Length: 135
Image (cartoon, rainbow, N blue to C red):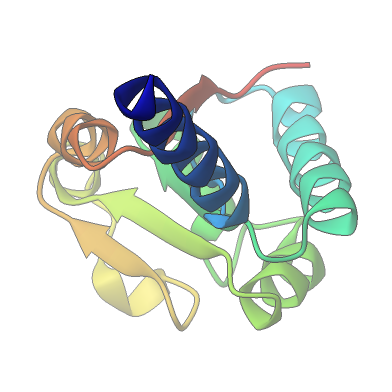
């Protein structure tokens, strides 16, 4: 009987500790679609409004990388706002090479990752929840 209470106590403690851990979300965005770009910022805001301690990283690859440039991004104020709230914006170096995007054109404060898919896989192995950007 003692063992049952001990096991039950351990489960309750683990459950309470798990509730205190911040949520970690990694979003993938590879679409050129501006509606998807707008949606990601809305979704980030919704999450951080409800749970401000959530850790968020958004990984851009493919044609979506042009959202993160100084000269072509319609979302610069939104990116800066979310960076100030602790959101990490990552960009795929392979996509940059393939699409001939020079680092000098990028917004400040970005994380350049060698391979977007590898970054996503690593974060998932570290307990981050994976979400695909969409409307």
